[in-house]
Image 1: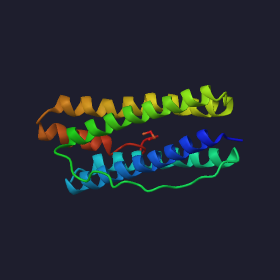
Image 2: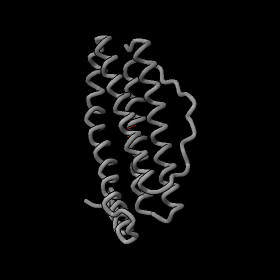
Image 3: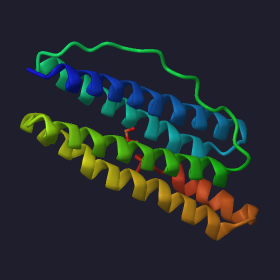
Image 4: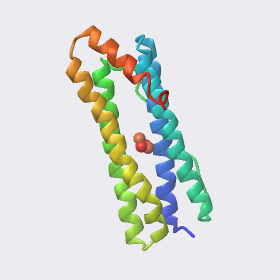
Length: 165
Ligand code: OFO
C-alpha cells in the first residue's frame, strides 16, 4: 500500500507527464506550421513516449492500491522563435523532469518504500536518455546555424525517428 504522501506525489507526476505529452504535441504542431514535418514527426514520437510514461505511473499507483486522481493540465506554450529555441525548451523541460524524478526517489527513500524506489529506477535511466536525445538535437541545430540546407537535412534525419529498423 502506498502512503498518502507517496500517492499524492505520484499523482502529481502523472500530471507532469501528461503536461510533457501536451508540451511536445504543441511543439509538433508548431513545427508542422513551420513546414518542418521531420521535426514535427520527432515531437509526435516524443509525445507518444510521454504518454507511455503517464501510463506507467497510472498503472503503478493502481497496482499498489492507490487511487489515481487527475488534476487540471496547464496549456502549453504554442509558439517559439526558432527550431533552436523550441529544442532548447525541450532540453530544459527534460532537466526539470529529471529533478522531479530524483525528488520522488528521495521521498521513496525517506518513507522506506523500496518498491517505489525500485519502480522509479526505470525513470532515472530514462531521463539520462531524454536529456541526451533533446540535448543532441540542440547541438545539431547549433551546428547547422543559419544554413537552410542544413536545417532541411536535419529535418529529414529527425523525420526518420522510429521509422528505421
Ligand atoms: Fe520526457 O520524460 Fe517523461 O516527462
